[in-house]
Image (cartoon, rainbow, N blue to C red; front, side, top):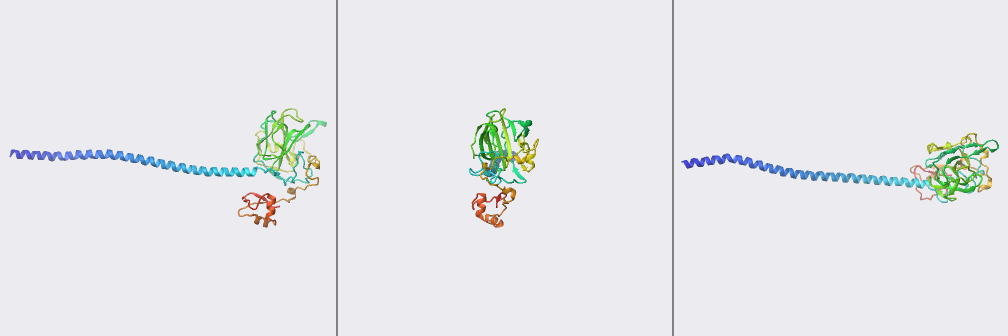
Amino acid sequence: MQAKNNNLTLTLKKCCLLPIAAMFLISMSSFSQTNGGTTNNKAENSDRVELKYKQRHSRATTENLYADGIKIKRDLSLLKEIQEERILDADEIPAEELYSSIWNNRYVNAYRSIENIPDTFRVNLDNFTMPSMGHVTSHYGMRGRGRRKRMHYGIDLKVQTGDTIYAAFDGKVRVKQYERRGYGYYVVLRHPNGLETVYGHLSRFLVDENDVVKSGDPIGLGGNTGRSTGSHLHLEFRFLGNPINPTFIVDFDNKVCHKDNYLVTASSYDRSKKGVNVNLLASSSSSATRSSATVKNKYASGEVSYHRIKSGDTLGAIAGKYGTSVRKLCSLNGISTKTVLRIGKSIRVK
């Protein structure tokens, strides 16, 4: 009986301990799973975060590189287009029609044979470069007194002998000469915008006749040659031989042009401190030009016309509109029948 009671007591104790043991084991198991699961989850989450970060970084970089590539190609294309527009061919005469095909390598003003000039002409100044950064030492206008009075057709900028002088615009060297009692060593550039610029009293040439130059290219070294009392650059702006006060075009204090364009009118030639007699400006002999016959300026007479290219235009359609031929259009513009017509550009039609 006593043994039976002991067995019962032992059984009851085991029954009491089982729930406790079970609870303990479950708790431990849960703890182990939680730690293990947490560790695994963290590892998985960490991997996923890192993976997502890498994917996101890679995608953004690819897009940026792609966008940068497009931008670079576009910028290079625009740069190439600008360069093609600015650079002249070696055998091309800048503003040839405006100057009636006159190209003289001896005289500053070789245009007496041109019968008339346009009433107005808009000059594009957008690629201007200061020929020298020196300050103004002498202005445009009358100089001297009495019999010694003379017209100063340019503006003087202070330079030291040997200082580099730069081209004001894209253009071509028309004159490279020496004048003992005047300009000394000097260069004249003709520009596609219609202006000519004169650079006097140089000590050395860095270009030759008929060289094509870009705005900002070195063309000579400053000096004190010719009729000069000290080292300086004599700078002139001329239109069809007629001098224009440089201060109308350039703000010499700030070294920039006043505006992107300058409108040449009759008043451009007679506005100075004491005025300019326009009738005396074209004083060179007719032998200075290619022809001694009077030349009628086609721009002034309206004989030159242009067509602005629009979407869908073809050489055939343009020729038909203006009653001319494709061959004539190609000849007038120096192009071929395969030339791509760019929207917004102008093409000469007569």
